[in-house]
Amino acid sequence: MSNCCSHPSAAESTGKFFSKRSKSYARGFRKGKLEKVQQYLIDEIIKEPMEGKTLLDIGSGVGKLHLTLLQHGAASAVGIDMSEEMLNHAKAFAQKFGLDRKVSYKQGDFMSISEPIDSADITMLDKVICCYENLDGLITASANRTKFLYALTFPSNNFLTKTIFKTEILVSKVFRSGFRPYWHDWNRVTNLLTHLGFEPKYSRSTLLWQAMVFTRNT
Ligand SMILES: C[S@@+](CC[C@H](N)C(=O)[O-])C[C@H]1O[C@@H](n2cnc3c(N)ncnc32)[C@H](O)[C@@H]1O
Image (cartoon, rainbow, N blue to C red):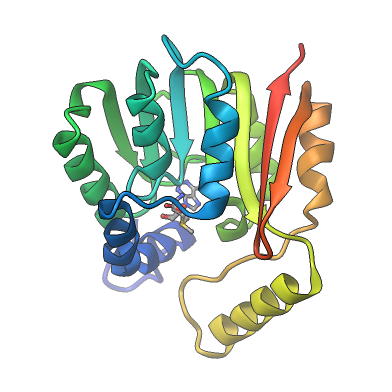
């Protein structure tokens, strides 16, 4: 938590950055739209029976993924995000869809949230690991709370996407923006999850984003 004289933490800056943009995320979802890469994840996840499944959506934004899976019959969801406004939109959507009793929300950095977070059958991180410096820590902590499926999206590892990200990183440094995106070694995603007892089940990409689903094998 910052006070009058200290710099905001990375989590606070990221939260504020996405709060300012939350309306545009909500606008898309209000029209019933998922991004192509999100649709890939949903189509793959719902190949499994959703009845009784618990969901953990980290960097849940306005709730697109977990609310869609609750509509497909999942039992309950926890949405976690650093952005207060993203979560306010998610709460409003949950109420509108009559799903508010099946979902709970926590604001903050998943890695340092003080309340206990239960393990879930399905964990999702949609465009989150590129917003966070500690890739290994975030994947390890979230995978350790996953009983069955681990689904995530991250930047496609190609020249165009790398150039866009590197430019955004440079701009955020030059303008000393509190928030900055990260270009990680994306091969570490599969390496880490394999090491943690998961195996890749599905992989599909758009020009900008990669969707992957892993299944726990131990
Ligand atoms: C690019 S947005 C994607 C939101 C959502 N998945 C979507 O596309 O609709 C990334 C979100 O992840 C959140 N975030 C990033 N790192 C996080 C962390 N460690 N814990 C909780 N939320 C995080 C940010 O606040 C932001 O709202």
